[in-house]
Amino acid sequence: MMLLHELHPSVVHAPLVLLPTATTADLIAVLSGDPAWARVGRRLWIAGAASALFSGLAGLAASQEVKLDPPQARDMTFLHGLGNAVITVSAIGVTLWRLRRPPTLGQALLGVVANMAAIYTASLGGKMVYELGVGINPMPEGVASGTTKGPRLLSREAPAALVRDALQGVRWLFTRAKSLITGDQPLAPGAEGLRPNEEFPPAVASGNSSPESRVHLH
Image (tube, rainbow, N blue to C red; front, side):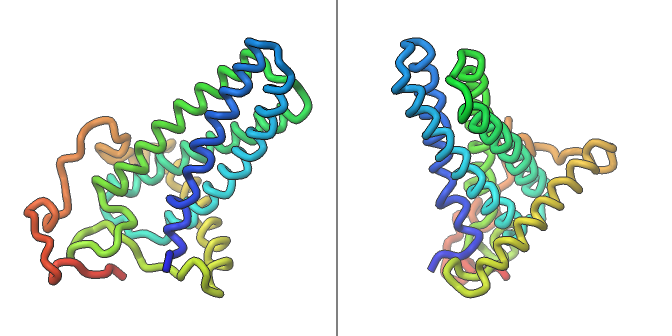
């Protein structure tokens, strides 16, 4: 059964589809002058912003439910979360604006920029999982990234854990941002995800996939 930290990757595709579609509808409305496309865009912004908010809360909770020992993994998760938080706030702002006004070219172009940023944060999410093993279970023994085995998604503990861990995730984002701004803790090398990662889990790099090497991390 799905674990709570697996909720975020399961729902994140909704805003990744809805927000670009909303932007596209607004661009068509602006260029064609068709009010029907403006209505479609407004509805898509509402759905996209709502799904981004829910996905973001699930992601903040997941950041507290996975194992993040390597500094690169922690800071890549931080950049992924911070970027998505900014994009979500922007999407909510555009949605509130679109509830009262028709689309404009400037607003639509702002949506394009936000969606380009979302592509970058999504790529960080992929690198976190496929290169650094964040949230992967089972993982080879001794690997520093993985999952802490949170509650099952449909368990009684899941709703309270989601809220608690999401709040802890918000606190973690602010604390890490503060230490970065003050210079107390610079960003770990490679956390920006702009160059290939050359460090793989030792058992994976050596091709060892024996049953003995695949264990659950707690």
